[in-house]
Amino acid sequence: MNEKDFAELAAGHALGSLSPDDTEALEAARRQHPEWEHYLTADAATAAVLADAVVEVPPPPGVRAALLAQIAASEPSGEKSGPDQVPVEQTLPPRTDGRTSVPESKPANPKARRWRTRSWFALAASVALLVGVGWGAVFVSQQLNTPASVVALDQIAAASDARSATAILPDGGEATAHWSESVGKAVLVSDGLPTIADDKSFELWFVRGDEAIPAGTFSADDGSATALLTGAMQPGDVIAVTVEVAGGSPTGQPTSEPIVAIATA
Amino acid sequence: MLVCVVIDGVEVPEAGGPPIDHAGELLLRVAGGDQAAFAGLYDMLSPRAFGLILRVLVDRSQSEEVLQEVFLEVWQSAARFAPNKGQGRSWVLTIAHRRAVDRVRSAQASTDRDVRVGLRDVGVAFDGVAEEVELRIEGQRVSEALATLPAPQREAITLAYYGGYSQSEIAALVGAPLGTIKTRMRDGLSRLRVEMG
Image (cartoon, rainbow over all chains, first blue to last red):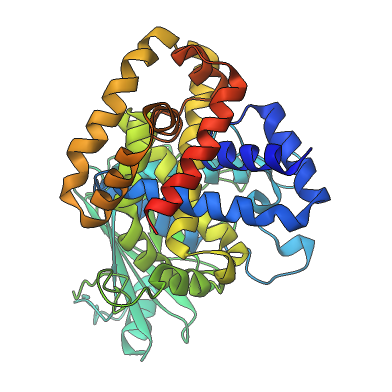
């Protein structure tokens, strides 16, 4: 390929109009002629300026909320070098159908991964997310027979690094996660939970990277519940709730879309 | 309870002054896993990116999906942004445009978009741009630069960038050989660059 042809392909590429064959030819020529890279850089910059001729349109807030929940559950590629640490999506070439793909190479927990990639998108439309810092008004029981969840809430409230975040449920209810890294506990206080059948439970999850880790089940009293998440929370976990069979999902993996997802980062 | 926005002090004014690459600075922080910087970058560039995606895709719900994919890609590959190779803003908008076009192509595979419909877009695409751009100074500069191009070059660039058409589609649309379209794009972009300084 001569330089003129390369320059033409670079222009077509910057405008997003090359055929798949031409794209391949361009990539091959790039490897042979790194000295021509400046055509691509210059054309890409010029093409990006064309974006300024388009009117700005504020996207719906749900997209932002979903993205923040998503990134809280995954790491950027960063400088990590070990192949095990690279997020799965990162290792995949851009897909022409534009969808996040389900990796086939790692057999472990395919279900969990599928759940996650689907669920955060689904959640975007229905759950508004507010991240709060500081400490909300929490009712702390003074009873003798204080449930573990309330004891934990008390401990969290007393910690200097107490944090909380609230998600609005699709039906208007509210779920607030309270946590403290120094205490190492998290409690979810919910109000207005949907009514579920007697043979179902609400199940809690820590969503960490692309894994969902079970964190106990709870039932609601007239739509209200205060539930302590079992297991240790880690910074950046997303706290999620799904509806499962009574006692929790037998597979240890969520089987339904989350009704609550709260980013803690 | 005290509710506050995640960005907290990351909001960076976009306009005026020397060309500081605010988006690029945020991208460097995003590459280090800074979620607040990511939120700031999203707030800064998402309206522009969404406008661009909508322009190419038209369909609103697909555009929302693509916008989300774009910023997820930004999060995942921010480490690949090289400040010496261009502005952060261009880097993000390039991803947005590529993803929008990818979606058009994949949608096309099933619907086989009729080129005659596209022919009408030749006029519409540019006129639409021309009337909208007055809203922004930056946009006006682009619009004026586009207007200085010979019509065939402007047409090829407009159909490709704003319409999401491939070179062979454009060749069929305007009835010119593929090689001619390629040359028009090349010459048109070079000229645009000169016009915009």
